Amino acid sequence: MDYLELTTLDTPLLAGIPPEERPALLNCLRARSAAYRRGEVIWPEGERVCSLGLVSRGQVQILQDDFWGNRSILSQAGPGELFGEAYAWGGEPLGVTVQAALPCQVWFLDLGRLLGPCTAACPAHAKVMANLVEVLAAKNRQLSRKIAHISQRSIRSKVLSYLSWEAGRQGKRQFSIPFDRQGMADYLAVDRSALSQELGKMRREGLLDFHKNHFILHAPPEG
Amino acid sequence: MDYLELTTLDTPLLAGIPPEERPALLNCLRARSAAYRRGEVIWPEGERVCSLGLVSRGQVQILQDDFWGNRSILSQAGPGELFGEAYAWGGEPLGVTVQAALPCQVWFLDLGRLLGPCTAACPAHAKVMANLVEVLAAKNRQLSRKIAHISQRSIRSKVLSYLSWEAGRQGKRQFSIPFDRQGMADYLAVDRSALSQELGKMRREGLLDFHKNHFILHAPPEG
DNA sequence: GCGCCTCCGTTGTAATTCCAACCGAATCTT
DNA sequence: AAGATTCGGTTGGAATTACAACGGAGGCGC
Image (spheres, rainbow over the protein chains, first blue to last red):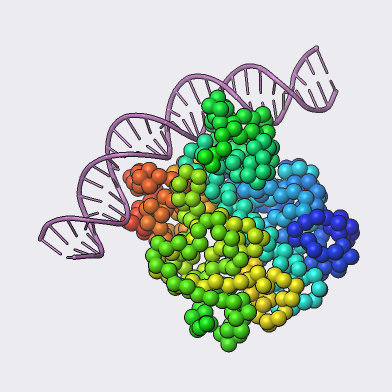
């Protein structure tokens, strides 16, 4: 297996592990790779997985389908980011669907081997564990944040909650978001046309301005 | 410090670590304890914490307040459960408020020390790391599940999504939930009276029956 | 240039939800 | 036992949202 792609990949999971140590580590973790076309399903919901996914090129979406077929975007993962890390141990079947949002290349790592008693086999193992904890904690915060947004009772509040957070994150009042309208509506769990409608109303009221996925907040929601 | 309470506590974080090894470990982690009255704030939002919380007695609530003052219950933690584990490293300020839901006793552990290079100081360290990963992964799934519920577009769908999951988890069609009405409404991010109204309508339609926090599902939503 | 397709905004209507207020039952206090 | 408090159900009206349908702008291939 050719690990070249991963020895130089900038990913939080392997942060702090020098390229020369990576092949041995990756071999330990039984790293293997696959390519997917846009829209292709990588892991269907219900699957039992014992490895986690790492995107090296392209982008994947983590989706959730409910009983009635509505699909919502839980999150997206680009180069260097992980998916399925919450289901890779504990034996629970996958509660989400992972799908290629763009043509992409992904790797699968058996990180379960790190959880066993003998963690010290490779010197890099401890570092991976520490990275893994930080990644899981960050994902946790990300999910909490989404909950904060979609817990709002009105579309306007959801939009403001999301956009003002995004503005804060990017440190500017003018910024782009990683969604098209449908994606934004899915993320905020609202109807697309209702979202467009509310955005238009907010623009007319001078709260903000926008074009496609580029936004400008006019009145700071913080007061 | 008297670790007696923690040497016998059944908690996923210390699972698999025998009581006699715990005092040394806890000492390593600078474990310290505090008691809180019902309603008392343990960690206010915005605080920078570098330890995680472990409930030994009572119950705490993890709350999220938005810009406009609406408060929603992210989760609750009872004896043996953790809180703040997503904010204990990475240096991000606390995005949630932690409050005592009941009179309670909690412990604070500096788990950040496990992430450093020398993990092998105590023999139990590796086990705690593995436990921590599983706890974080489980929390992850729990947050994803809540998102699945509140992403539903109608109160009825939210209720069915939540109740049918709860029925599945408990393996019976008749079960109790850990919320009163207001708590359930907060969890599902809907208005309490609207929730009562919808529950009454669903009962009239024969979908389910309930009394207080005890529910009986009549028609399986799976078909 | 021409269709084809995707994305986004608009409109109108039906349905849902919020909100505030009220009421009764149960529990707790004194 | 009376009063206070909490909890859950109900109601009515105002406001919001979903839903379906349509139309225009822009990109793309031919």
